[in-house]
Amino acid sequence: MANRWRDIKQGNVSKEESSSIKEEIKDSFASAPIGNRIKAFIVDMFMIMMPIMYITTYLIMDGKDDFQGSDEARWITALVFGLIIILFWIAKGQTPGFKAYSIKLIDDNTKEKISLPKAILRYIIFLVSATTILLAFLPFFRKDKKTIQDLLTKTTVIETKE
Image 1 (cartoon, rainbow, N blue to C red):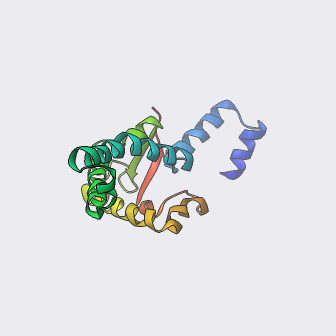
Image 2: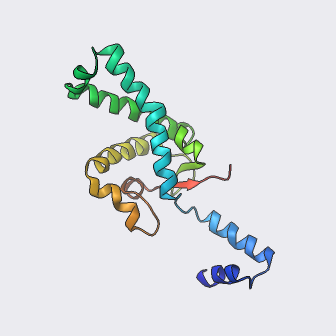
Image 3: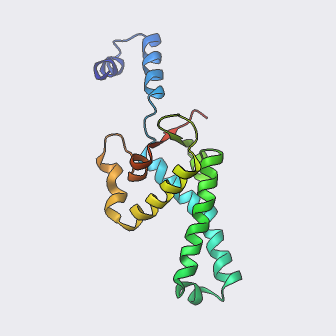
């Protein structure tokens, strides 16, 4: 495969062969670029988490000071955010951020959307990895660019053709 890729770059392969090689690469379900995944996460935080935090802080509680003083309120907002993300994963395989950057979450075995138990486990592992900074950097050291939640739940975030 590596030699074929060099041949394409050097122009030693016909256009028909190069297009078939590119299709093979697309069909291998390689992980989406880390940059797109990070940007999709930021979009999700602004589109989903920020309204939840605003509602919790100003409509349910008495303001910023009450929210910051309440561990329960912060955990509840994280759980509501998680519930919404999980629903997106099992319904469409994409969150709004994933859709914006043309990426999708799939099960490694079925190549389809993930199941509810797998989505719940994936979000719990995400919470753990986000709090243990070291695990958050795992994809930067792996060739396949998979996160700890991808590895443990056997899922992959792929680029879509949309």
